[in-house]
Each structure stands twice: as C-alpha cells, then as structure tokens.
Length: 190
Image (cartoon, rainbow, N blue to C red; front, side, top):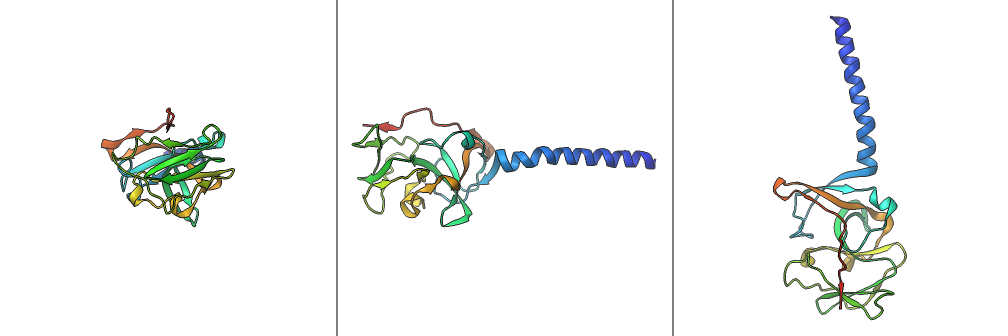
C-alpha cells in the first residue's frame, strides 16, 4: 500500500516536472497571453478580450505594415499596449486632411494608406500635420479607434526593442474566436 502511494507520488512529480519543462519555455519565449483593456482598437478588438501573442515570428522577421502588435508603452515599460503598425523604419508618416500618408523610397511623393479595417467614415487626425520621419528600428503605430487611442500621435514612434510580438489568436469571447495572420494585401493606394 505504501509502495503504491510512493509510486503514485513519484509518477505525479514526473508529470509536473515534464509539464513545467514544456510550458515555461512556450510561455516565456514563444507565445504569451494578453488581455485587452480599453477601447483604442474597437471595433476589431474590444475591452476584456483574451489574445495569444506570437513572440517568435519577430525573432526572424520584422513587423509589417498592418500587423497588430503588443508592445511596452515607451513612457512606462510596465504597461502593455496593442496597436496596428502603420509606418516602417526609414519611412515618413503624415496625418493630413483626415488621412494617413506614407512616404518611402518607392513613393517619395507619398501615398494614402487604405485602411479597410477602420469603421466606415472614420477620419484620422493628428496633433499637427508635420511629417514624422522614422529612424532605423522605429515603427509608427495607431489604434483602430482613432478618436479613443493613445498612440504614436501622442508618444512618438515605438522602438523595435519595445515590441513583444504580434497578435496571433483571439480566444475569448468564444463567439469572436479568430486566428490572425500577417496582412496579405498592399494597403498603399494612389
């Protein structure tokens, strides 16, 4: 009887140790849970939604325009924000007349960003109409709910070192479960 009890406890310990060996690296190096707080990404992400963040992709690839990312807030790295990548390193971003313009080597005169993910009729306004030049490793991010978003218009570009990962999966609520990939379309238009 005692021998069976110790065999059971030993087997239970093995399962716990093996589980921790698998779970801890996955949790800290591959994926991470994230809980949405606030209205800055509505209607695409609502308050209290539960997301899984892919932390591994950006170890091999750079964030792309349109990616939905989670990053540490530059003014308080203890806080996490979720926003959409708009401007890439080496580009310039200008918000003018309710639209976002992207200037880069392919488009030196600038092109309007086509933002089908925004609510119909939503305009983007900045604090001023100056162009923002992005240095190497800097990204311009905006919330999808532009009127309720604290984003690069307020705190500036986000350095690559602050980016945790991209949104991979929405797991809660169940009626909004979604798997997210990288955008497969060109969102610059004439």
